[in-house]
Length: 287
Image (cartoon, rainbow, N blue to C red):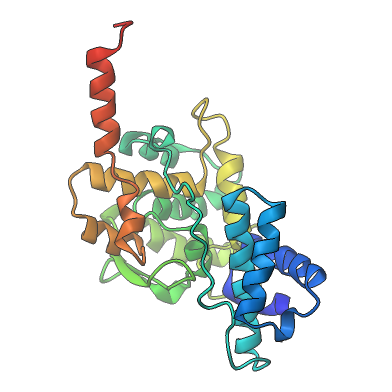
């Protein structure tokens, strides 16, 4: 298996390309990478610090290096993983920009968008409803198969990804009706003479990939909310933040969105933001 085949199998297309680019740079700058040990990699990172001052850049390079050795272990080219315990102490900002998120009412407005082609209306409604109500990632949407939809139980099964856990989520009643219409009538027409078990089918009768979904959302909702970008990621972030703001327990929300760690969910809490707004309202000199 080639490196890129491995990356395509385990990561979203954009992520795979990014890792591939960084790994090629690593191999070009460090010819002895294949047989390097932990001390060698520590020395290599030390040299990178002299070149890069940005913590995010260093973290991205280290992540790519780890993925390279994941690949070597996966394909049996190495038995040990020299980068497994390679960590940086440099702080990175993981703050979610809560001021750019959407309210539940604004998210509902996204479902009123008309499709250019009538045959795609139901497909787009299915896609957007799974973003707005279940807060799925583009990769999770691309992985969905028809067998993951259980209309009688009113649930959808979400497979695990590199960054999220698997889970079974409830569908809203009108989603069940929407999915029934899509699966029984629209999806077969989109497939034409081809066969596929992918849930979301594109115009060319092929399942939508992660990149297709990302581009569809950006293109379809460009300019809808001036000053804010409507993206699949921003929709998911909004769903999570709204659930926490409504008083749902962090652990419940963590399971709902598939976060592997509670700290990932905690980033979406708006308590401090609301407290800051109150303080500004009380004490701002221009009041």
